[in-house]
Amino acid sequence: MVVNWQESLGEAVKALGALAKGNPGIMDGYKALDGAGSAHGALDLKTRELISLAVAATTRCDTCIAVHAKAAAEAGASREELLEALAVAITLNTGAAFVYSSRILEAYDTFSKK
Image (cartoon, rainbow, N blue to C red; front, side, top):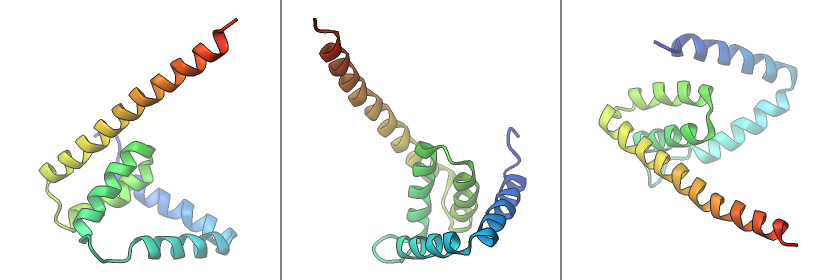
């Protein structure tokens, strides 16, 4: 195992707890936002967790990965479903790099004109 995800999650919970204790308003604000974003409606919990993991891949958040991998497994997400969600994240990141590469080329061309 490259990362001990259970240990990482425990350490993150402690660190975030210390932050919340030092500034309770931060935790209150986060809980309000999380509650609003977690309201169950059109998407079931498993789908929401798969989306969360795809986003965690694009934002590169190890704590998000640990939290949502655990939640996705508990929600009954299959490995195949996770692989499909991650394929979407990978494709989107590739597309974004392609689009931004064209923007970079345009910016370069603008600045290199004499």
